[in-house]
Length: 218
Image (cartoon, rainbow, N blue to C red; front, side, top):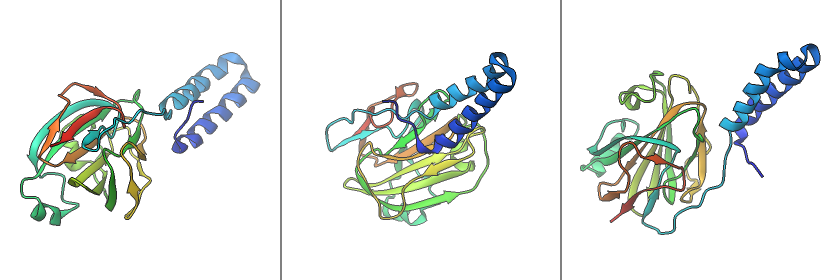
């Protein structure tokens, strides 16, 4: 049975109702456009099950999409957690994933951990593909306390996706591959991993949330 993200039901229902009204009032031709939009909403908000890789040290992708950035020792985009830089002077390895409108947009936890903090930061709505979007766009940063140390996941809004939804709060426990939120329409997700993470992807790779191993803690 096909599963959909709960955030998508209002969109699906609205356009389905519009389709029915259009068909009743104007026939098949008038219902073509709203029915196409309804089908797109069903496709966009799909939420398929995923096979989570076995192995405590394996880090999985938090999003579907394309890897557009891999950098080590970065400390940018961490203004939400200033004290964290004092604890981790080596910074983090950052992996950025771009989600197109055709990707599944449900986000999943990269590893087991306890949500230490959730911070929403207002900002711009630049194209999510631009690297400066990590610094300037509206985003939600989630700090996870894991057995490997701190891990940060940032849901970054894009030029079309103006709303990120985070379903977790401080104190929640997440399992690797567990759903924690969604970003509506094209967007970007940045994950900051400990510097001793062995990266298993390269720029240009296509990844799936909760299923693709993007790193391994050594």
